[in-house]
Length: 546
Image 1 (tube, rainbow, N blue to C red):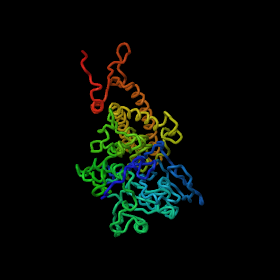
Image 2: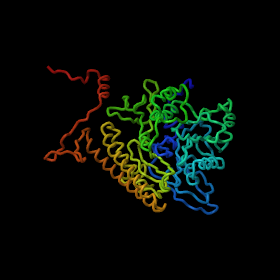
Image 3: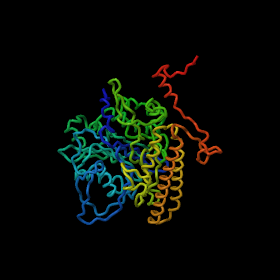
Image 4: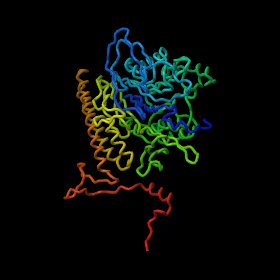
């Protein structure tokens, strides 16, 4: 038990590590999903990250070829390593074999910041080019940091292929040792798991083929004075992570919300003291859900703001007159010298991109992996269909089509922001309009994927790849155009605080003279009116004039 939670200073940063990247990764092993798929999610949350789809084509490399290592966070050149003879094609965080890797940064003990060559982002993308399976990926990743050193702080990785999902946690050894200590655990087939900027691996079996770890993961902790008990009592998280309110309320709470959504009713209540006050037992690394999950379940979970829980962001006065489940940074604030915090939910305004990855060995090799890819806020984006065989990003998701400082109406990221940022002002009124377009597009995408699966069943890989690329390109173009139109409609409909009436076809209602009719004044919610009265008393009260 934590006797006293450290002050909320860490919440002024985005994560316990203070990184500008603060991400969420949710996991469902094959036996916990409706189609027998491995599924992982990722939200790349950053105030400066542009939402685009990365890719690298497959390539053969001559002997002696070198690969540059560029820090993913800061775009800084770190050095070079020898290239391998052949590298696999990648699209986003997935490769041509359906291997997918996600992450979340937790920083941990700051004196252990890595001094090696390979940062966590480079570790992901280099590995995707070199490994076919999750187990291969773990070996590639750990061999790389063992040979060339690790350049980041504490990190959790979700590593998935069509057969299994693993969680691996890694942290550097400090400036005097470029290596890293790590532990990896396979998520049981019938379970769900997740991590969100806090180390989640506590005790682990020391003799188990489903658990892997560096040979010095315990001895290094002893050497540094982080642990002094029996080996079987060793907790990776307790030894290497930092425990404060940022780690629990701001990070573990997101995983709790995911577990709470799908666990047997009421079974997660016992962990509320842990995430609220650091009391009681920590949450388990995984749980068995009450039912099997679908990709749609995970998309919806990525849109979570703790709705229906004690942490519901729409229920306090911070949500304002339109039940807005967002809070602008900084997260921590003071009133009369007392420190307070905003909640930090899975869905957040500063997301660059997010995805739901679905890997299934029973599908055609060209769609062994489906990367449902979205830009900007996961709550309001449309998850677009990208496949493990997709040769290059659609124009609307491609590098160079706008950037974080350059608006492009052809970029999916910018039209999604156009819609989302209007909703942040009048959320309760606008979100039904957004959900109608969003769900219509995502339902259409699912139908298209189902049709594609049947159509390509007997095709060659090359023909199926071409077919699926057309699906990706056409739906990305459609969603981008539809969201630009949605943003235009929202601007007109809610102009100046009014709400204009619409016909069944979506056009605005006019009378015989062409004047808008059915105009409504939406006003505010009762909580907002009541807060005015509570603050101002009778100053604004309507009285009879005699």
